[in-house]
Image (cartoon, rainbow, N blue to C red; front, side, top):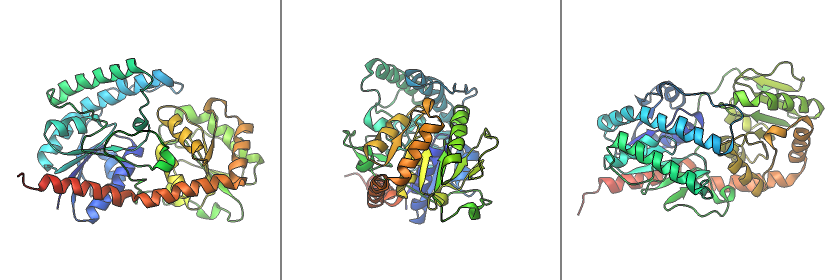
Length: 388
């Protein structure tokens, strides 16, 4: 059997798909270890996971909630991705030495994983938990692309001794992309991208959810802005709660920041929700177009209302609309009336659900965790074969 090391950033949406693949590899008898944030990994990958802890940057500035466009991209790289890679590098190096993996699986936002795997001469695969990088968001910004390249060159020099040449976001050994053409669209892809669809696996969830509150006779909508948008989402969630006062539907709103006050009686507010089980019981999803939430909703054939805030979310929202599976709102202008109109449309117009179900079918055909594990097994097998 082979040994696989997963290198992930401290972000729930990036750990969950990797955890699904890791669970599949473990079920097939392989050894799996992790390099990343210890507490988060033990919560999402399980208390028995073998974790090599990686540090976080000493000072992570809080991103202003209204930061968008080029300024948000600059913040992402200069203030988050590169400092995170510098901080994670010692822990990743320890994992490589102590675990001696046959294959490294490095998330696109855990840059230290790909850089150090290449420097150690190990086969490595990129885990692309969002499709934003696959469609080259910097194609129209050559100066920004050059700036990112300079950041990567400096990072490589600091943590990998300048060894290697590959872009850590796109391993020459392969990229696992958790989407399909039906959602991604016809965009040209980098070499060796494997479209495996979502990798869903068991995950911890709050055990006190009041399932009896859901009414089978009334449609229900899950509302979530993810875990990283608390500061930006207060006004949007308040307008959404108001919108349901005039709708013959129920809403379950995830409110991790506790920003909502009094809400209509047909709105249930929870700090966290059991998302996967809940998606099997609702009729639509209103979200920020985070790739994980979108794919999990579409896996269940659910139409969407998407209101992207920043980063990859506008790209994912555009894919949802192009697939015919939902309606896009402008986050900053999404008042009660606009939210009401969009929700009524996706709940009553069957074409949105038909399109969502078509994407769901493509997800299942792609293979998810099993397909991803198969690609990794093949790479491990090639690395174990004696050289001729």
